[in-house]
Image (cartoon, rainbow, N blue to C red; front, side):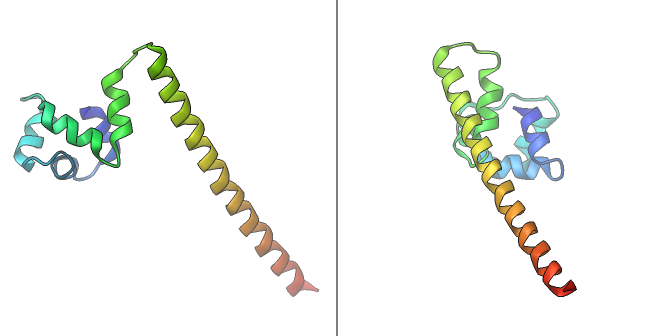
Length: 106
């Protein structure tokens, strides 16, 4: 979970981690230094945050339960659909800009 926090918030990791887990910055600093373990209550808060999915993946590790595999597949396919839609929107914008440039050249 610490690796996830560092990846999500490379700058100000302790402050972000503290805010999301509803603990003091000092407690988060202890976790980051490896001096204390994250409490169950704090882990629950991280899971319930907008960034919860990467923390859940970290907690589940290499679990091969079918329900977990289905959850991951559904999440990944949904994310891919959203990414494709965003790329299609960006492509349409670029094509529109290209047409506008072509009109100016004529």
